[in-house]
Length: 180
Image (cartoon, rainbow, N blue to C red; front, top):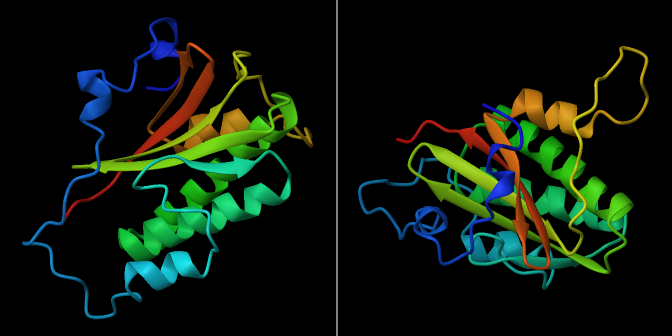
């Protein structure tokens, strides 16, 4: 189900529904695959001092170049840290790029936040900005050259929405994953 279902009632971070998206601790039953990527620290060291979006919100400057940083962070987390499938990572990277692009182009903010959460069977990626202007899913025509961002989010994610905050909003999407 996609859309803005949760939009009317923002969920504060202390809400139990938001808490269930907390990052689980290491699972001793899940051994790394034989071709496991490099340990976590080098993955994020290569991205510079931006931080780990699975531990908390990473703040990025509201510039077009930040979309590339957000894409690399997403790929590093989904492929390197969470060992998810390349296709799922490719879709998530595209959707992050769209949400970040919207935050950069349409909010007038100086910064935005990126956060990635995982729980059994799901991942959730959030982009937070200080604007309370709501994104709008527009009809898309075959020859349209812009305005396809939320259309892609709607088609490639399992759920998406917007949570209004006292100062701004969080636009998010969720995707089902196969847990081992």
